[in-house]
Amino acid sequence: MKKIQIRKRAVAAGMSLLLVAGLLSPGTAPLTARAAGKTFAYTYKKVTVRIGGPAKKLIKKAGKPVKKKVKKSCAYKGKDRTYQYKDFILYTYSHSEKGPEYINGITFLTSKVSTKKGIRIGSSYSKVKRKYGKGKNSFGIYTYKKGKSKLQIEITDNKVTNIRYIKAK
Image (spheres, rainbow, N blue to C red):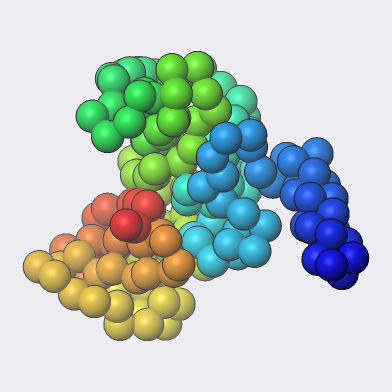
């Protein structure tokens, strides 16, 4: 009986540490410490975020968006937001009206930004294949899956024309 109580206290203490460290948010936790490395990461101006993870640091670092769109979500009581910046578009969601935002997707707009492995708009298909492998091809869109995220790279005439990260179901 005492062993069970000790385990429960240890689990509670561990959860408290995760909350304090900011790895869990009260209520829902779409990205836990263990799952953090299991999704694609995107780095912009030395800020690294993960698909499905908190968007706050990226939004702050990217500055004022060129365009912002907010719509009420159909799936839950939160909001879906689209932030268009000069180099990329950020898609976020929240679970409540004023709750924290999480990254639903990122679409590259220019060749100034790249994936963690250095792929950018204009890169050759052979470089994509060297860095990521063949991937699943559907009409020139190569999809790579990592945990609960996907990286989609569109190839036209052996050149990258579109790159997007999306949250997988």
